[in-house]
Image 1 (cartoon, one colour):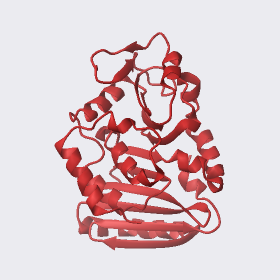
Image 2 (spheres, rainbow, N blue to C red):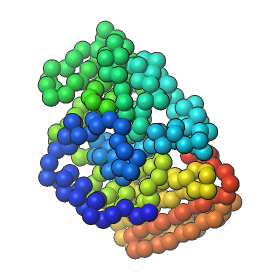
Image 3 (cartoon, rainbow, N blue to C red):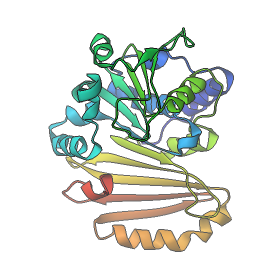
Length: 285
């Protein structure tokens, strides 16, 4: 269902008027009904420079017998098992995960003492950030290596493959840097249904395309409904990309029922597959 405009408008006002509180984003085990709010908060914590982030509602997957196959597939596909091996962060304790490749933000019920014990001697407590618990080490291009930076809080684990990733996160929480959640992203989030997996991205696929979003929902016992929203600079730009969306619709019709709608500068495409998961679309590689 469509998110409430008042909720999104309030989130924008908060984002503009004040920095994001590290304490508020560290609440453990948020209620499932607050997934809209969690999506907004986590988008507010991802630097704009990343341009692509996927929010996984892992708790909902893990606790739903119909989605057990999806959860196990995610564990194999994501390679996030290194978080448990290297940092003591149990995958089954993660409720929400914002995955932006070199930066991941996890919310759940974590054993902070265990995580500290897993840190190698290369990590040092960065006293430049007295208001938070930040651990740093030298940068690395290997996102699976135990280097970069870590931020710990109540129900919060942030890991950056490089120090710069963590420092960018901290700047956002202080209101010193732009995040992915701007007015345009808010417009897309408002139009997306509430799902188990949500992806927000920016690219130059078309002239005039600003931001796009994709959500996967459970329908008929399966994770079988996918919705995509594209926001363009103008209705003309959206119309100019019409041929691409018609071809995309024809492709998706091989999997199930498809609807394609245009509303000014917005394009909405929805696919509902019959009696199976949209596994290929969710895990393309």
